[in-house]
Image (cartoon, rainbow, N blue to C red; front, side):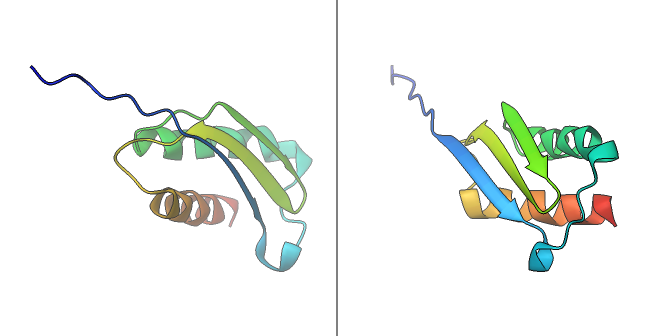
Length: 85
């Protein structure tokens, strides 16, 4: 019997809005964080924490074993951009 392997790589992802334009409004920030949590869940992860100001966002999550950081970041950025617009 092959032993199971465990992976627990925590990712602190920080990204800004295009040209650091202040798009992220206080009124709907929590909704944006919830939406991004859904994107992370669809990719097999679990968003542990999210925080943002007008022009950038911080996310903390364990990296799912089935996706690369680059691919997950692409999903998060594309989805959140569509959600904002």
